[in-house]
Image (cartoon, rainbow, N blue to C red; front, side, top):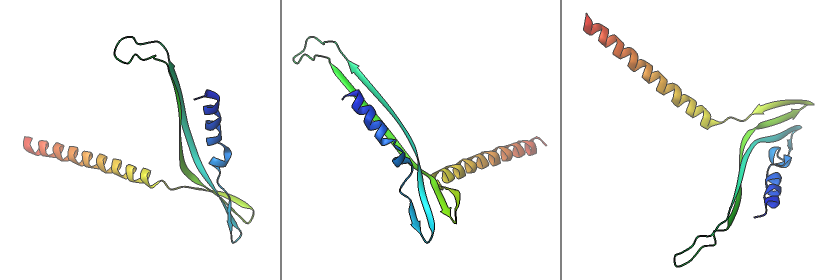
Amino acid sequence: MDIMKLAEQAGDATAVSRVFGEPVTRDGVTVIPVAKISGGGGGGSGSGKRQGGEHPDTGEGAGGGFGLRAAPAGVFVIKDGEVRWQPALDVNRIVLGGQIVGVVLLLTVRAVTRLLTRRRGRR
């Protein structure tokens, strides 16, 4: 794949139209969706010849790729000439945070219980 073509496709994928969605207007309120875009790319090439075997390989190669991720960030709400930001609610982060707090709580309760049990055993 041509490196310039890959770079052009990557630029098109992260254009402003991909970050800000089409505005939606209802009852005098305009909402503009916003997404957080992240991406990465890479490429490679090779050369050399491998000898021997039934099917000798020329060893030449090339490659490239680009990955893109879009996640909702929130919306701009325009009402009566005023703009306010309304962040998106990421339920997965909330659930993960709750699980982490729960594990820490259980470990703390276990440690306190063991400590109290040892103290009672010494008396």
